[in-house]
Amino acid sequence: MGLLTGKTAIITGASKGIGKGIAVAFAKAGANVAFTYLSSVEKGQALEEELKQYGTGVKGFRSDASKMDDAESLISDVIEAFGGVDVVVNNAGITKDTLLMRMTEEDFNRVIEVNLNSVFNMTKAVQRTFLKQRSGSIINISSVVGVKGNAGQSNYAASKAGIIGFTKSIALELGSRNIRCNAIAPGFIETEMTAVLDEKTVQHWRDSIPLKRGGSPEDVANACLFLASDMGGYISGQVLNVCGGMLT
Image 1 (cartoon, rainbow, N blue to C red):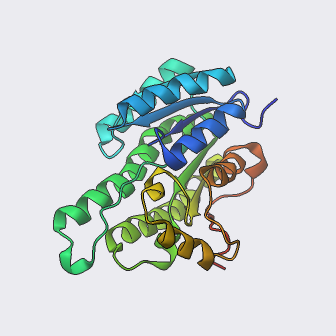
Image 2 (image 1 turned 90 degrees about the vertical axis):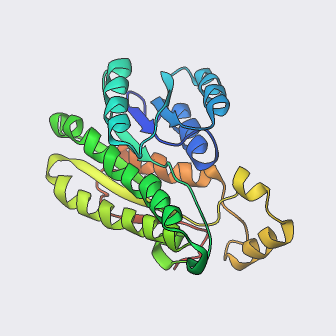
Image 3 (image 1 turned 60 degrees about the vertical axis):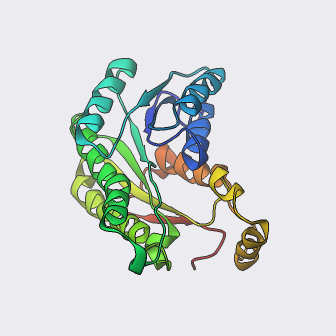
């Protein structure tokens, strides 16, 4: 029996990086996995095939969580496919990094829309289902940047800080119905995105972390697994920093 046997989870933005790590960990733990992708169609289809080896229900959906209609359709499609939903991981996100003096209104608005509005849309869309069954776990992927800020990322930091405020509010609103809502704030996680960076820069970041290494998608996935499972049953409204000691 896996930690998530019998549960159905939705993970947004799971075709690569942290989202893919979460999808793999959840399937290994026995969950039915519904995941979304948007631009990375081939990677999304490849992940669907990859996850089938774990013997649980798997389905990828091309869906844009930053649009409320898409979020509502996704929830109903997942319920139709799997008979219900128990866990939502709001992972979809983008960056448009630049200094404020060069940042356009579009750069700011688009990051807020994808990173923050999508969390509102998905939570709002799944709320009725969770209220009806009097259970559910919502896990929102924030960032250490949302906790401490970062030069050149004011749009991203604002979106990720917004996620934390939203998470705490939903935990207060829905806790009486046995619905939990938590945030995870990853630090420097080594993914396809960081693989294209200059090795010297990456090593400098590693050296500045107390554990002296970057995190892996699996490190974030394991924290999600805990919060999604019954092991995290008395934890709500919290921000778990998965950062190798960057934030203390």
